[in-house]
Length: 484
Image 1: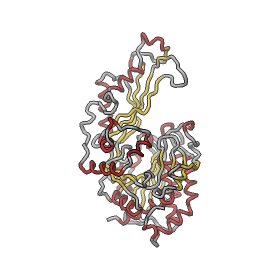
Image 2: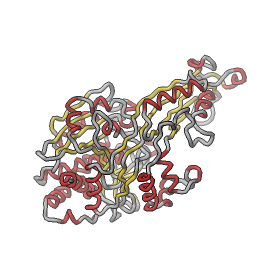
Image 3: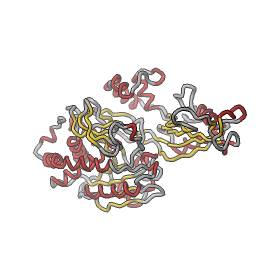
Image 4: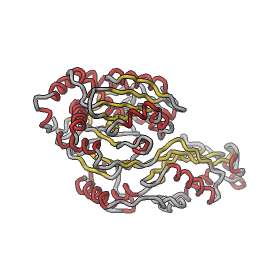
């Protein structure tokens, strides 16, 4: 059990905790059932079913006016909870998950079985367990516990959920800019996405922003190029036929420096904001508090980029925009060889952006770069993305998060921004213009990877299991209600 003197006091929290303990089996079953229904936007899988299920989850937790919000793509879900409170808190959910290959998993990814994770405890394993259904289901558990205890949440709530986060949220702005959704969000003190990323010492990160992202494909083909084959042909003809695959490789090489570490797209850095003195101090604090060896082991690394020392690698992580190849697809990739000269090649990329870059600027500069380098025929198909996001550490949302962690006895390390991305910029930028962040205790890992899990019963005394994590969300609501 985590050290949290506030929870031992004879107040509403004690009754809520008792209800959370009584509800635990139902809360875990709710998570397992949700994992069993994956919405995968990239595959157009379970889109109507996923949206309908998200509706039912919201209604079951006490939200009213719950409805699907149509978009040009996958629908969102919106609901409110008027508790007659002075303040209102926004909650962001994503109900979609990443693709998966069952052959790579040690436990079936949709069965949400219990597994033992040495050093962590008993966990549920499945696609979406930590990203993001486990933490989100835990927030719902907090609302169920409060209702069972007969305690109204001390803040009003606004819920907005989407089913396209894993493809770059291409239509999310359409959801939040619906007049009633926008009006509800503007009344909030801010919005957060539930998280569960405690480290082995129980520490958490409070990120004051996140990098933006663009997800796209670059495609080279004989058809568009006007050279090379329009379809796969025998590789023996390479001596007299151009290769679209090599053309794509050459185009990719122009995007970065020879070591692959720094974007070389013309004008890419002209609007990049340098780290402030405060941000540099936050990074230095994080480096001093972290366990570098443990992090390297978790990432299966032996060196940081450019052989930088840890603190400089962390600074580079926060400061630098990136060009990353997610995947390369061309020709035959099965067992053995197949002597062909492919007529088409595809590179899947993600571009991470930092303040003050924008998605529109980055897309324009990438296209201009390819054209100037002689690759006008290389197609650029953008599937989604959004700008970087920033939130003031003095905002009521962030201060309530920090106060909650202090009350829970959890070490919270402020960071300038996450290296990862989420559509927080949709909230922090006009017309919504509210603070946005992450909050939660508990632990899980394996996002976007095989054997993703979320801890239910923690064996680490510094890390929350599902009931303690449930109470963390309860405490967050109380702290925001009491904030100055």
